[in-house]
Image 1 (cartoon, rainbow, N blue to C red):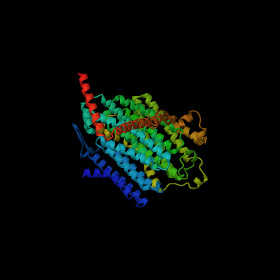
Image 2: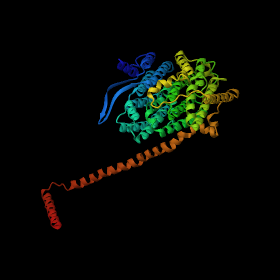
Image 3: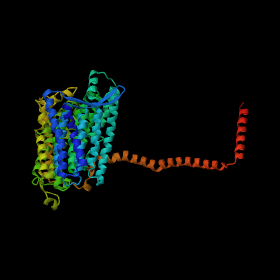
Image 4: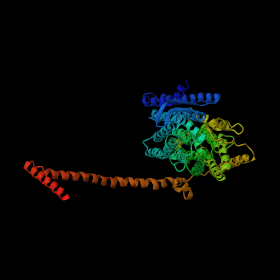
Length: 625
């Protein structure tokens, strides 16, 4: 029975994908969207069933479907593992995925290829479930590659726009760089352990039966894979460009699911990273620096979705910071709360863009509060949550990360705290520019301003409620999440006991965020400041606004040399090789032409040449002797 239900959980979105591929165009858009949504809701309901069963008996489920690979002493089956970690991930992947599907029915209703959009969304959820529930690294890698493919399809969904195609290709290529690291790490682990099954690897590591220096290299390679998928330095530039896709894609892939895959993988392999402390240090440093760099860029962006994109990169950096200190449960806590408020913010921005007929520049917004009250309040709650304001969800999870950083590395704590203060500033900058003061768009846009339909606002309300109360899953005192994850974490992370120092740290973080909010209020409300036009930005602000010219740097040191090398191969080397090969043909043709001339058909001439040959051989033999 469990096997069948697990199969339904896994395959339901894939069935939705097949329906929309083969029949989506023959049915109405409403039916196409409804089937796609129901397919994900089924997986969500089954995830709840398995979660309830796990809570009751405390044991996970490992189901092997068939023997997959057997080469010498390496053996692997195809199976799934439904334990505390995977079920927790399934709940928010399928739960938030269901809400985003529901939202998309209205948001994408005017698109002629709506059935194709839902097919891609369903396929993405199927691969994401595969990534999460696999019982070994190879099954995870199938899901890992699958979500990368779907990301490419969804980012470039409006393929008639060439910049969108370029953004899709950029995401695909940068993810492949990280995937190569994942692949090498997986090969090294298979070589050392002769298996890729999580349970078997963990058992060998815990017993101490491995002492290979290759494990450090393997862990580093896996981390490179995580950097690509979760947009960390230096592989983060694809994520902001990926905002080219429809807004539900941004909410689904780049807030709640795909970008968390790197954190899931490191948490799943926690027993490996625990014995490689040098790699953990690298993870913590990369996370902190990524958080600060992305937050600083977010301060000056004017595209509402790009602000949220850099906010995502920055928040992922904080999660990696926690992972680097071995606080996997803290990272997972922030993954969950971040999924709630970031999905709400992306969907809210989509509601704004929908009302303004595609306008994404905040300089052309303003005053939307009175026209879109539900969108405003839901986004405000999520903004308070991401800014770390008490008692919203982000306050508790972010505070845990900052406390962990303070107890392990004061410098990184300062870096993370500055990034958090910046977050509060640019998020309220977004809110003030979008919803307050007078509307700065065109008269035609103003005439059509209205709140979004219920299919868009209902998911916003649900997500806003979760963003407000989601922190309750790990409040100090109860620490339900910490206890729940204990069976899947080898090293135990001690929960912070509230004392004078902890209250002081919470106060510093809260006061810092409030100062940033007041500063943003003073600038954008009191002084009515509106960001300058692109060509009027100068100095260091221009450098930050242009993303520190990182893309230009990559173009200079990687893209241009590769293009020059490719051009050299195409225009010089390839023609030269062609001529060389052709010269062999010409030479053979010339020799054969000359040989053909002596083929006269005269038997006497042939005998004469034959005799000359015999004489030459005999003479040679005499001389040689």
